[in-house]
Length: 316
Image 1 (cartoon, helix red, strand yellow):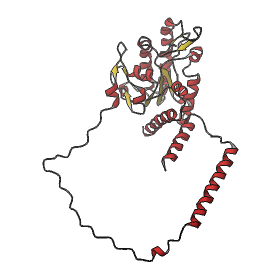
Image 2 (spheres, helix red, strand yellow):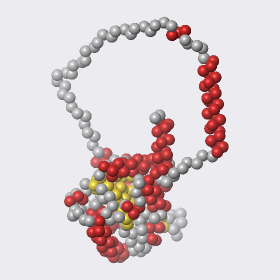
Image 3 (tube, one colour):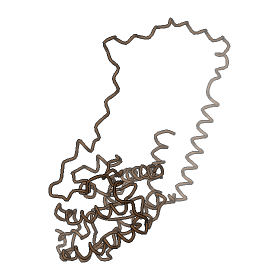
Image 4 (tube, one colour):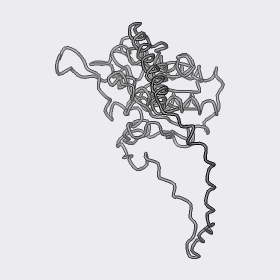
């Protein structure tokens, strides 16, 4: 497969990943391509007919190749020790800087938490949601009208974590239901799953927004501050402890940085396996970023990340 074929295949995979199952081509363009191909084939045939015959040049027997004098292999110096190549340090460790004043994740590995049955997980998640809504409702007002806790299968093997609810999520009380949520749904389906089979939550449970500079009457979503993240993180840590997912996917920089408690450039660490309490964590772009930068390159990167997730899920 040449480079062009690989690029086309990658582009088609990215289109399928985001719900585009067919690529329409105008009929006129198809006919033009056919005529171009026929003309090219005719030129090749004409060139072959006009080429001089080379049969006469093949009458002489081929000359035997000269015998090469064997060269003995060079001996390594006695003082030179053979050492393995150094293992590069993970990029994340070089780029990370701690975020102050965040509640830390619970100590120990997630696998050390008490193992719960699916029924127990559903029950505990429902209880946790009631408690969280009661506690966080005291902070409603301004841009936040309701608590957006999370939803999905409390016993899911795969968990998606975003940064916080937007306008549509604040209105419905459900995470990822706007344009970003619609794209996330397509991504999940492309992975061979359905939304009810995964668990979806956010760093913050309350909408973070401010007046739009262009239209002050309109609120514009913004990333959460450290204080706002600190308000939602304890609930998220408990959600993860209940679900006990096999893999976590963080969507966007805010989700990755606040969950791990350190600043990391998602553009440089996406596609690399990190971890949260011993659970494999795959950082990728937020669907809203993909919508703002809806290029083949961006979608191919996200699809590449999701394929790594699918592979590890299949191996687990």
